[in-house]
Every structure is written in structure tokens, then in C-alpha cells.
Length: 300
Image (cartoon, rainbow, N blue to C red):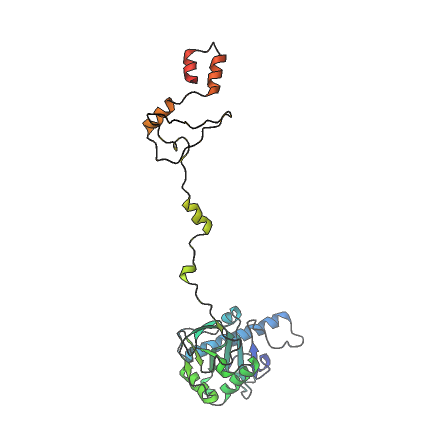
């Protein structure tokens, strides 16, 4: 792929590694800030054009590689330059390989779920005019050495038939472990996984789940007593042999009886009328001889 700017000067090495910052590999001596910004814009243009070409080759509805996606994710992009191309002295791009670590839930040979975070192949593209020339293997092998991983430790996101044949031809990766997601792993993935596969913790039994605490359960067992005098038992026709004692202190109410059903209104009024006056009320009536009969009746 050719570009209208100098690719050789922008990418001095045959394989350039870019991270999410998309910074130029090396600063030219004497360059100013505007020139540096222009260099980064050129790199973003290369990434966008490579993503569009890869999506077209894989018949995807939209590119999965772009400068904005690179800046928002911690992915690494390996760009291969054609050193033999000299289109007006500007150079050309052969292809790219994008990788990144992702947290996945995969099945092993016993169909057990495992939480892993392997290095994943996210996008791989070599220009159609330069395929079957060994460029793809050189780029892939450089990535393996740089990331220090083995081919069977990788997870591939939606691999095409060309990529599966490529892995089978150069790395003898043929037997896959069936998965329920879009990632493909090969036999031996769990043998030397780095980082190692982590088993998911077992689910908690339903019987261990408590809807409320023990203190709540004890509170629900206690019956709420209605306020006095609604909790008093209805008065019988014959008074008991030993009436309940009254408190000698001023202002204290009599002792409450046991919890009884709700007292009807008529029975409550009758019990209040039969209740004898308080000793303090008798003392006030005796010391106030000038009080009117109506006032005495109200006091009683």
C-alpha cells in the first residue's frame, strides 16, 4: 500500500511496533512541535487505511482496526514495511498484525469453564499483491519473539479460513477446542498457559443464602403489645378476690395485665366510668371548698 507521504522516513525499521499512543518511532533532529503533530497524523492515516483494507479483504461490514480504536484500547500493532518498494522514493506498507490481552471465559477439553487472559490475535492482513511471499510468516514470527509466547498459547478472534490454513501450515495448529464464543484456541492451550488459567469459584449453594439476619428473625417472633389501656382485660361482673396492686408513686399507671384481644368501645367506656378517682384528685377537692359542683364533677 502506497501513501502520499514518505513512509520510509516515518517508519525507519522494517517492522514498527505501535501502542495506543500512536507515536512516531523516532524524533528527527531539529523537528518542531507542528512537524511532530503532522507525523502522528500520518501514522493515524496509515492505521485507518490498513484497517479498511483488512475489513474489505475479510468481507466485514466495518473496520475492526482504526486509530480511534487503538487509542481507546491497550492493543499493539506490528506494521511491516516493504523495503524493496521505491515508489517515488516514498516506500510502501505490506501489512500489519494487531494483538492484545483480553479476559476470556473458555472451555477446556472436559468442557469446564476457565477464566483466562491470553494474548489474542485481533486482526491480521497482508496486501493481496504480496501474499505467499513469506511476509506474513516473518511478521508473525517477529510478534511471537517480541511477546514471548508460543503459537498454541494464542487465542484468535474470528479467524478466517486463510488464517487457519496459515497457522496449520507454519505452526502445525490443527486441532481446535470447541468454544461458545467467537475465539478459537488450539490443543495445548492449557498446557503452558501464560498467565495460567484460573478456575472460576464454585457457585454458592442456594441454602446458604439468608433472606435476613438472625436478629431480624428474632424480632419477627415478638408480638407487638397494643398501648394501655387497650391491652387490659375486660372487667368482669364479679371483681376478683385479690385486685392488682396500684403504684404508690404519683403519676405512675397501674400494672398492665396480660395481652388480651381488642376491647370493644362500650366495654372500654364502662370500665373507665367505674374506675375510682386518683388520691390526688380527692385531696384537691377537699382543700378547695369554694369550688363549684360542676368543677368538682369535672375533676372527678
